[in-house]
Length: 132
Image 1 (cartoon, rainbow, N blue to C red):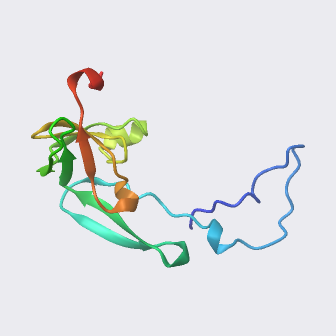
Image 2 (cartoon, one colour; image 1 turned 180 degrees about the horizontal axis):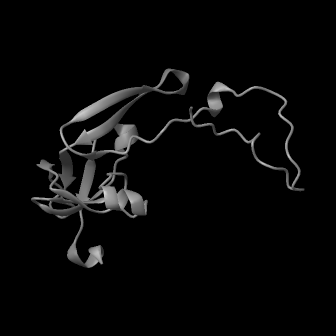
Image 3 (cartoon, helix red, strand yellow; image 1 turned 90 degrees about the vertical axis):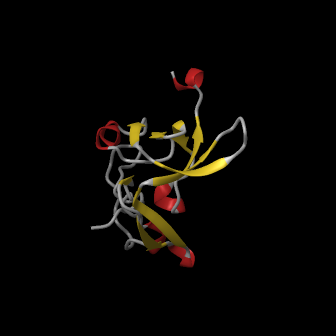
């Protein structure tokens, strides 16, 4: 069963049901989230609409971390997922999404890329004041 982003399943403003007048279209089709976790590097290619291909990171243990003060970027190992504000369940399971905070040898960094769509984990170091 796939994800569908059509509006035929919703109700009208009056509360009545919408009558199905056509079949589902390909442009309304969605996909399940990649839910990137910490582990051995594993990627999957997904086909998008219009011939687009997306690289999905299923698991990875490295991230490109940028230090905003010096402007330098280093490939560093991810030690653990500190916090994920996107979803309480993701926070508990240690899923890496955009905005998740990860611990690296350089310090705590916030993920700025979308691992499920971009195929890479980029992060920016966050300062102690900004963290709270």
